[in-house]
Length: 319
Ligand code: UDP
Ligand code: MG
Picture 1 (cartoon, protein in one colour):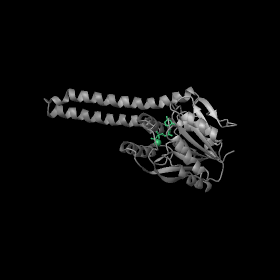
Picture 2 (cartoon, protein in one colour; picture 1 turned 45 degrees about the vertical axis):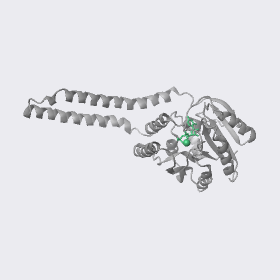
Picture 3 (tube, protein in one colour; picture 1 turned 120 degrees about the vertical axis):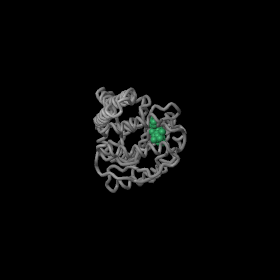
Picture 4 (cartoon, protein in one colour; picture 1 turned 135 degrees about the vertical axis):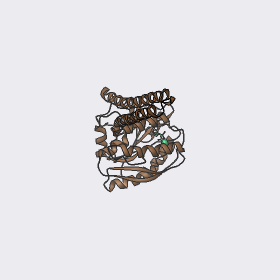
């Protein structure tokens, strides 16, 4: 059994895989225990899977899973966690934005007794201002709203002790926001700071839509405050309605000929209330949609190819 499992989700990363492998090998050769690489192909449409097959042929430490279609980053990582056999598991991105050279520092903290060591970004070089600003705002909003303490500016790059991996694997939920679940699990947790490098090659695979989806998932999975927002908005519009009623009475008494009391007020209040109601229904929808997902209880992913595992671990949320 390996001591360390390194999980890397891969979606159309043919340009980075050779360099990724080179840098990972340079790091793991210095480590104090055996390593398995778990490369998870998330339905890539380029040559990524072929490259993984080649690596597996060349190096018996390389295991890979191939999901039958693109299931998304969080599910790909979950699949990796289901198969990992190491005593400690490291999750990192394929594009080398999470520098493999940080792994020894994560392991050092693990040796000191921490069960979760997450890498916290101090800088994001060469990511555009829009991504930086939205990420900054999102992590702070999530911290305010979430029921568990989810650390700021840390992505999925982390080391997890076997105990925590077992907890994550036993969680049946479909909407997986791994950085939240990992905080939820508890156990001693600590951060290691790092500068986020630019992507090594290729284009960003997290489109704006996927990032937004992940952000909403994080909020909805870890907070019910948005549901309460409808109540607040309701109170707010009631206050405005009351104010308008007073205004109308005032105008009627002091300016009986003013045309203001007419259409403008009606039109704007109809729009305002319409917006509040649609917004509230939208929030309800986010939660109901997730309840529906959970109730359907479909497997989280389907696998088309698995190589390198002699005895895969039976785990609960595997297909
Ligand atoms: N990824 C994936 N499935 C997806 C999208 C992304 O497995 O549907 C992988 C991708 O190959 C990379 C990691 O997730 O290893 C992070 O993606 P990306 O670098 O595009 O995101 P960002 O760094 O902007 O968060
Ligand atoms: Mg990236």
